[in-house]
Amino acid sequence: MRKASIFRFRKLKLSYKEIFHYALFLCTFIGISFAFHTKSKDSPKQFYAIASRYENDLFEHSPELGIFWGRPNVAQDRFTDHSILATVHWQQKEDHYLKEINQLDESALKNSDLYQTYRQLKETLSNNIGARICKEILWNINPSFDGWIAITTQVAENQPIGTPKNRTLALKRWQSFGLFVDVEINNLKEGLNQGYTAPKDAVIAVIKQAKIIINTKTEQSPYFDFARRDDNEVFKKQVTQLISTVINPALQRYVTFLEKDYLPQARKEIGVSALPNGYACYLAKVKKETTLDITPKEIYNFGLSHMASLNKEVATIGQKTFGLTNMTQVFERAQYHTDYLFTSKDAILKYNHLAYERAKSKLPEWFGIDPSQAVMIKPYPEFRAKTGASGEYYPPNQDGSRPGIFYINTYAPKTHSRVNQEAILFHELIPGHHLQLLVANQKIMHHSLDKYFLNSGFGEGWALYAERLADEMGLYSDDISRIGMLSNEALRTARLVVDPGIHVMHWTRSQAITYLKKHSTFNDRIIEGEVDRYIMNPAQATAYMLGKREIDKLRHQVEANKNEKFDIIEFHDQLLKYGMVTLPILKDNIQWHRQLI
Image (cartoon, rainbow, N blue to C red; front, side, top):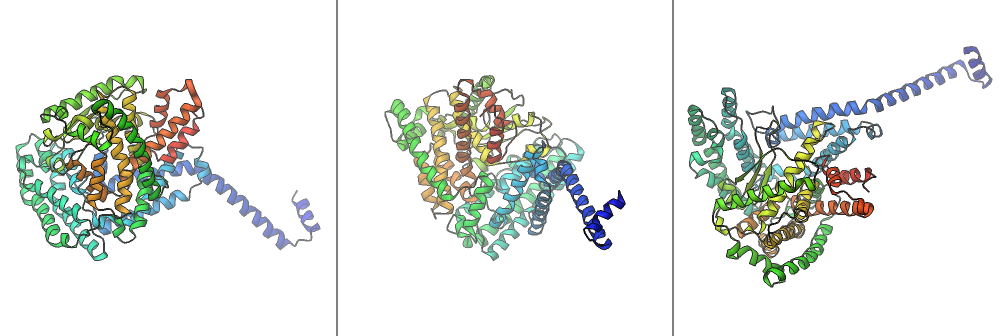
């Protein structure tokens, strides 16, 4: 065979040298093909290893995120290092992970169970990298749930205690609180040098929060919470000492810096358009929060058009209930009428508990899962309640040691109407976030990283969809609560107008407050807190209504295709089973199940 082959080459008048080079080329080609095939075959295995390393690095970098998710075995003795150097180091890790992912053979992953995790991680990293243009750590003065004061008080509430080892770790963490705060101050100083500042109103709100905590008795301080849960008296005294010598002095340092050095230089304009690369920052935040490619103008216009359709719904129920058709007048009557106001903190809590039990009883008709994990309904700490927090949910610990927690605002209870209480509860608990996360966690995940993705577009879109679904389920107790449902949707629709209004169209804070007052039933304190949240979390608030719109579209497509064979339980199961995916992935998942569409 060898002689015949050479003879054929000789008939082509090729020299031995040319034959040698040809053979070398052939071997190289075969080697490359084999390597490519091997690489393709190994891509799922390689990606699984990458995802595992990323998951470990993520929670090593951010112990607070691990606490939020109730993840075991996260660092209990330190906070996230938010210094500029540590932030750059983490960003370099993200860059490296994205580079590794991009080197994999995507076509081989498409046939793998890991393909969705691959897409999720790739999109998450890309969106995180895109949002770096905002340089948010340089102007991080945030009075909402994303602010470091809110986050660290949550750490205190969930700090493990009860054993000598846990107490030692807790003391070590909270002894470093002063250094943590000093890093935040140093970042703000660098922000001033580079032309990045927070708006004055946000600064004033955070100063107010910090002062409330400083002036709270030690035993009632949110930072005393972990000591309050422990029965060791020596430990309680040590934490008391920490609050008086480390925690409160650090907060006071922060307040002094904000009042004397920062506030005079804080920006008057509230939108990110006032910052360097402000418009590009807003576009990047829209993509990160909604997971959609959509312009601020499209968001704004959809807000206006959907508000017009909501006006008609409100007019119908307002005429029936009050003889009124104007949205603002209907909402004002529902909000301020004495018949609908609470009389006490306990009355608010009882009302919410009853709504939760009613929602649980109806689940089997709409979902193929029974959420066995309990929920605790708790009042906000005073510093959050007084500055306008409206409602938040935190998932349970993975080991079941801590239930899911739903925080509600019970401050000044006689100013709270029951009009939107049920809608908020259905949003946060059942059939909203609590159910959403439990369904995802009880399904088989192809990688444990799947349960830790947070995508507001689908996450918040589902919870807003759940408020309307609650009406289909017959959960609202009366038309006043249904007005609250419409008010909540009007608020989320108003956000589509207000958020780009603030960040692109140069709206003032008072303009935003006035618009929300016309289109919601929240009291003034909560509305002001809402606006401050939009200011410091650009685009996040737009994800609710945009996400709900995508879910509604998918449901309408499935219903139209299946007609009388449409199964709402199956549809909901397919929506929720993959976790908090991006909206493009959600659409692909539903369309892949051809039996549904």
